[in-house]
Image 1 (cartoon, rainbow, N blue to C red):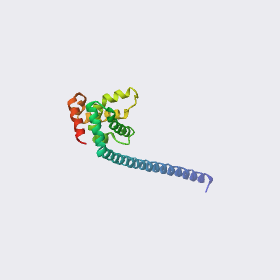
Image 2 (image 1 turned 60 degrees about the horizontal axis):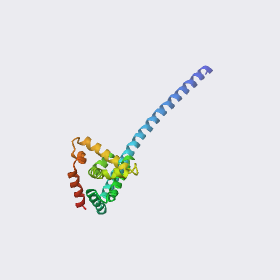
Image 3 (image 1 turned 120 degrees about the horizontal axis):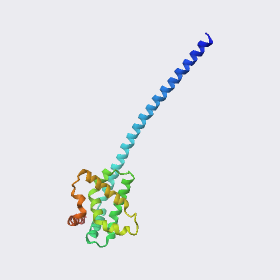
Image 4 (image 1 turned 90 degrees about the vertical axis):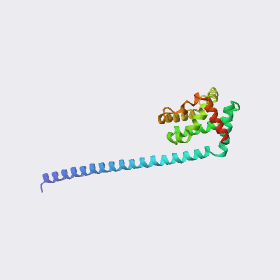
Length: 185
């Protein structure tokens, strides 16, 4: 064999090796991309499962007999506009839920489905106390406010004519709902 033929065979072999390496890189890249998609889907499923579990635990905590007593005292305080410090435990609970939503540990939709009624009621009924206390600390219950705005946005999307969104303009209804919280103890 001549040197020229050997050089040509070597060159073609190098081209074939380079082409095989390129194909191998493409196949590997596709495999990694598919693996990443699968991992992302698994991560989303796992995160949703954790959020659903967290929602149910929060609801269970919110509905304990002790927490119903706390809510009853808060409702009494808001109804009478006296001893308003009793409402702070409920505000703090929703502050925590708001933080969990804001940090994506709990989805907005789950918070809306589990807590909209109470978030709406306690924010509207306690708004005066909250604003008064914010004169001393501007960041007080800001996650509760975030939660309130978030769940109201979802309610507005679900039902633009929802009467619950007009609760602030219905003092008699607020009174009825607070009385129901007192009686539910």
